[in-house]
Length: 80
Image (cartoon, rainbow, N blue to C red; front, side, top):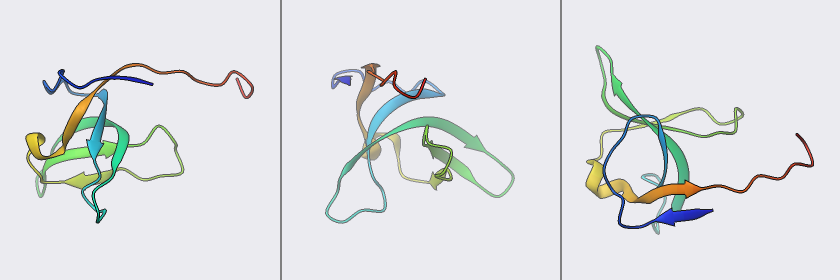
């Protein structure tokens, strides 16, 4: 994976490296970030590409989460 650490502009449904809001000490995770604007929740949904993981919702500010935008991903073709 190649991450642009200078690209911190939010674009809905893009893949980013973000700080895991639930980990202590802080760790970085890779997630597709979606804006959540529902009746009872306004914030961000951190969506894993792995369907076994449910989206995580966070009300943290974007600038508290962002590390950088993923600009290139390598995926194994063994299971393709």
